[in-house]
Amino acid sequence: MINRLYTLFLSLFVSLVAYGQTAGTIASKDAMLYETSRHLYEKGNKLTIVSKDLEWPKGLGGSVLTELQQYLTAFFFGQASDSYDTGWKQFESLQGKEVHAIKDDTGTERRYYDMGLRCLWLEQGRYVSFLARLEERNETSVITQKYSYFTFDLINKKVLTQKDVFNQTRMWQDANIRSQFCELLDYMANTHTADSIDWDHLPNQFALEGQNIRFDLGVDKSGGVYSDVADDMVDVLFSKDFKRWMKQKVSTEGKTNLPMEAVYTTLPTDSVFPEVLPQFQGNVAAAIGQSLSYTSITPETTPVTKTFVSFIVNSDGSLKDITFLTVNNIELNRAIAAALQLLTGWKPAMHNGKPVACRYNLPLILHFQ
Image (cartoon, rainbow, N blue to C red; front, top):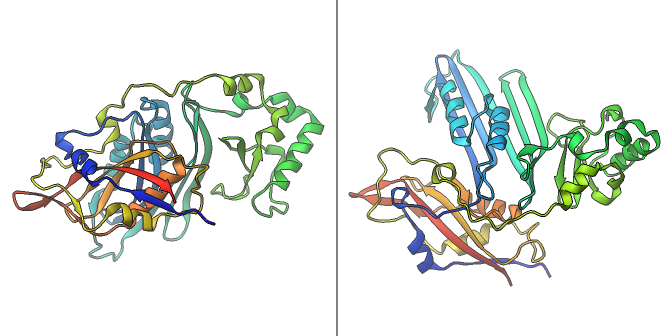
């Protein structure tokens, strides 16, 4: 029988921790932003449409992960920055003025940016893996299309390279081992690859995923063709340094909290602590539970625990800046974020009789029944 996930909601507890941004926020050592949005910019005769679908690590284990922020901002925004917020603002400023409707597009040039960042795996205290995608195009052709499978080493604060993980002599010079490796990748490919793989250059990009490694096969320009291979099937290719790194003990009990400015997006300068906090019309937990995707959420992969999610309820009742302050289960957080984005029925905070934007902190306890 398929397990169904239910959400228990403690209304009294939520009312006690639903703060306005100016009054304070919940301290957190972890923070993952889930950003799904579309923006339109106008500059002269140029229109730029930016679509974002991002799972962005603002910090893990009490660290803002400056090296990871710089890697991601350089990939997406063309310039390395120490935070998502700074990188996005710099990129946004180059696009012109943000508008909400096109008045007259006669003779205008259109430019499109599609940005996607998906967290593939988090090994607490050891590493986090991602697939990043970016496509830039105009109305007739693709200008830039790139992607990156990568794993960020949380111990040494760097992106793992091929030399960090694999024994280069065995990988490239042992003909027998290399032949078996290529056959394995071909057999484990997620789709029929025909003769389109450049075997001489494998492995291309890769990412660690728990007991598996995902190898990009380099067939398309979005990382959509890959092989997921169990570690024990390619153990002979691992370097001694990598094996020592995987056995190294890590501590996940750090009590250092992230600085507030690293976790939360700044509210408008005219924001105030409201007289009336945001309210959801109905049972917010039940509404989230009804919209959750249960496909990959099971009792084995989803421990019963409290999850803190924080977001801004805009003056029009829409949500933005969905940030998880607990990053224990990537699949669960992703499902909750998607469910939140589907919710309607939020009443904004009120101040002096007018609706205002306000941050809302929501603790959730989930269990299987």
